[in-house]
Length: 108
Image (cartoon, rainbow, N blue to C red; front, side, top):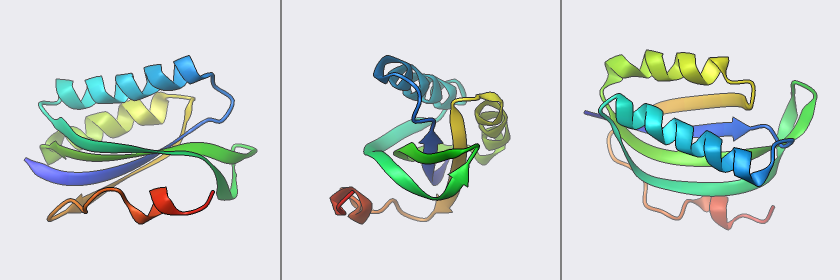
């Protein structure tokens, strides 16, 4: 199992129930790939540095996951096909950083 940290940007136009469904869907994708979510943080609705699909804000979600790298393409494809996901990034790490992250403590 490889360790990854993921940040997912979700559309600001969705309701809180749809946001929860999107997060649950991501967790199910990780679980179906024999992976596990170690920790997660909700960074909330934040300003984007540049507009993405005409949005200037997005919901930021941070995950620390362990999954076999061969399943990452499958997870990427699922995220790419979801219209509510504006962007996502997976970074392979040696060790997960301690939570809470600095971003969570910043002023919004």
